[in-house]
Image 1 (cartoon, rainbow, N blue to C red):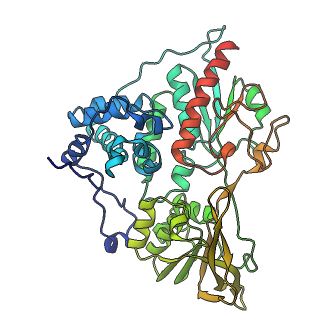
Image 2: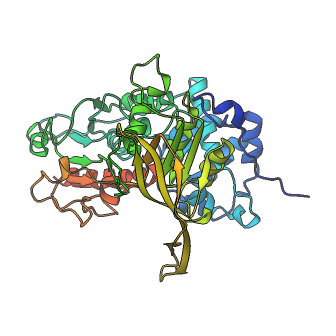
Image 3: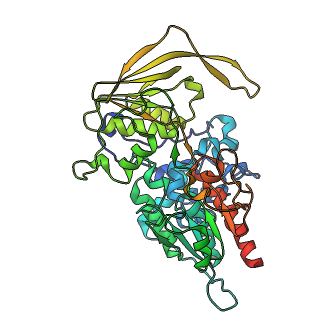
Length: 468
């Protein structure tokens, strides 16, 4: 009997989706979810769980979907993950749980992400969200113990949900006017709808998590203020929001946006709905995005959807093989007509008499011999300079730590890159009662990695608070 092939998730046709911001993958329907879950062989040693940063019992929830017990499946998932609808959409399962799936030996790992999304969406559609019984943790005076969380990104949300389920009063302080951090300002609507993030945040509120928006820790309140207000511990999960640039001539020309600014304007201010929302981004007919990570793909794919844009380029100095973005995102970008200028390095941005960018000067590259780590460094090929006509340039080259909070806390140790030094297993920093996790301690990483750090930190914080 031939083994069934892995089911792909149906998507909008590329010709249709470049004209809207609706979610690209449709997700499994019930028949597809049951068929895909039934492919799981329920191996005795489910190595897929080892690949999950938050240790979801993947084997069991997949079994329950195959048995059509969707309520049971989402219950199992939520034992370890309070953001299943988010993870089912944006986590890189192909390099985590699916990479450990035994079925990978056949080239057909179980589509774990799509099944997680199905369970989460089924719960929302059927109104079956179960209440979690929580026993408040009280101090000696009978008052519930309060813990502060700086930042409402994936790490902060995870810490808050875990501590809330343990019985603590978890209070999140978020600098922006919407909770979700990078989930709302960094990821496009067509990959992760804002309504999905709100749904997950609302679930945390039902657990007792309090979210205070428009509060910037480091400015609105200092870390000292937080403890003086009665909070017994603090988790710092503010991400790494300072953009990196190419550092080439012309980078200060008009029409050049950091990917951070571009995505924030598009997502949080709804600039993609101009003129309905009067927060536009001035963008020309030809756009170039420098970089080839997930953020670069997001910026390029958003640009492709904007009115008046005719041509979008990805400029990357290495080859197809080295692109760090998820394979799915690269595939979708190509389907949508993004032009990939690989083995190409930008040298200079050229502007007109009014200071607007008009061209990007590039040079062709080749990859040298592998170094000790196996990575091949790109080298310029003399005499291969050329120009690409552009009206908008978006450097998407990663981010750095924001120093507003980190450099104003006496005794808080930072590493040479400015990130908080935190124990990777506990999130403990150099200061008692202060923990950190996610991008502010590791540099830019994945949503699920930040969530994994949040889970570990919450457990360590519980041990610390119980001891105190």
